[in-house]
Amino acid sequence: MDNVLQMVWLIPLLPLIGFLINGLGRNSLSKRMSGIIGSGVILFSFLLSLYVFFNVKGGNSHLAHYFNLIDINSFTIGFDFQIDPLSSLFLLIITGVGFLIHVYSTAYMHEEDGKDYAKYFAYLNLFVFSMLLLVMGGNYVILFIGWEGVGLCSYLLIGYWFKNVNYTNAAKKAFVMNRIGDLGFLLAVFWLLNKLGTTNFTDVFANLSKLSTTDITGITLLLFVGAIGKSAQIPLFTWLPDAMAGPTPVSALIHAATMVTAGIYMIARSNVLYNLAPLTQEIIMWIGLATALLAATIALKQNDIKKVLAYSTVSQLGFMFLALGTGNYIAAVFHVMTHAFFKALLFLGSGSVIHGMHHEQDINNMGGLKSKMKITYITFFIGCLAIAGIPPLSGFFSKDSILIGAYEHNKIVYSIALFTACLTAFYMFRLLFITFNGKFRGTEKQWNHVHESPAAMTVPLIILAILSAIAGFVNTPALFGGTESLTHFLSPVIQQTHQTTLSHATEYMLMGGAVVLILAVISWAYFKFKNYEPKEESSAFGKILENKWYVDELYNSILVKPLQAIAAFFNTIVEKKGIDGMVNGVGKAVNYGSRQIRLLQSGQIGNYVLLMVLGILVLFIIQLFF
Image 1: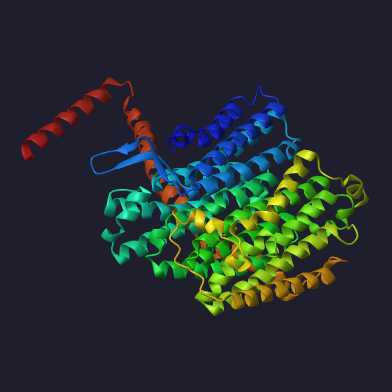
Image 2 (image 1 turned 135 degrees about the vertical axis):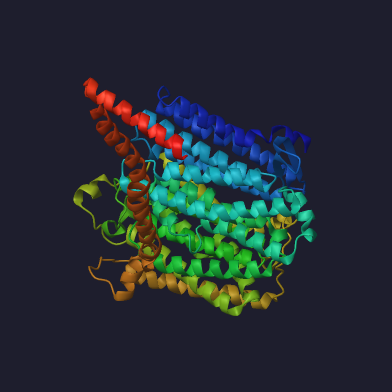
């Protein structure tokens, strides 16, 4: 373990070095060199993460202390890294998927000029550095520093094409909505410091007996508020679909390997704390379930290929929070891992389609692409099977473990979750069939331009497709003769409150029923969309879904416009007429008074003598009466 501690600091340092080289040298580096540096540092971090993973595989855990970040009389906060099975798993996800996205970006962003190309890779490297800092932090303060870092990088990358006002507005929206959640996180950290005098994970979890039930409930709820913002749950979910404004590889990085999984990681890391807060867990479960269902219904009627995937991510995150709320932490982490593979695959696959269609994103203008983009089609198809939960692909195992936990916790919750899983299969295969099947609905010029993407883009797709197909076997349940390897691997860190008590017969029935339903939904989607023709008019309910339940409009009416009105009042009445009026009034009064007083300077001696006499009289009166 000592060897691990001697080099573990290199894992986040390498992406930081890549950020500095590409950022400072963007005016002189060639595009080829920028891509090599940006991708290379992530590859080396991945190799080091593999080394760490195999060293903690036996359950080893260690806290690496480097220096004191804050050192005052009442408390000390160290710059510490927590090296254990949970952090090592996330290191592999972040650096592994992150590396594939970097390689993919070298081809996808080829149209950018050298300076912007280097800046893009600098931002990507900084994003990965921030996420690594988040999952490696040994206390809530270091975790929060990484937490804020990914928020900053999301702003930079979503608004990468900053000359487009809509894109910059999307970046600002993501930044502001995340700040709302981050306030909750920060208040929880202050609460812990006030009660325990420490934010170290080991010290906090060892001293929970010093906290009252009110303390634990308050702290866990505030931490969850932070997770709501970062992981896009109701009511702070609307920033994530708008994050599609950034380049497609950025969307893949945000949705699959970084940022939105931060909330899942934080709650899984704090599982000991959440096990003592049943009220918070119940709230997490219902918010996760509601988010999963709401986002899935919206995805049914979206026509932007990236927007469908964006709402899919929000929905899948809802499933993960559902698992956390039922105490099924390992199922949530398992789904984070499988989702990272198939969602990165789907986003990069959509990027390949956009690349082949020369920046077209409306699926109504696609169709029949599988004949010209066979690799993209096959890999995208595998991704759809995985996210739909078709056995034996990865999504089947991870989503099934969530559904089983929901069934044991609450049958109503299970029914809603299963219905949402069916919606997932429907909107994903709707997307697949409309995009790749039927006849082409774009222009002849677009069809002539359609082509398969270069190897730098298709090779990551193939690797992610393989991982999406086989990753579920790392936690094969005993029902299928497996040993649940991931559960045993994470057990030293995660105290799982959920333990399956169902018989194998019941599990077979639940799994089989879910698979049959999903296959029926896929068949329905096939017959409905195999020869798709866009309709000019939608039903009333369809328009509601197309407009995303008018949530943005609701927020705009009840929050944005009133705040803008208040801001306009303060700007016009308080600032301009009040403060500015007072300050400017003083200046005008002095100016006016000066103009009048200068008239006394007439140059006539008689006037001066008169003023002198009047002055003497005034002084005499003052002396006499006062």
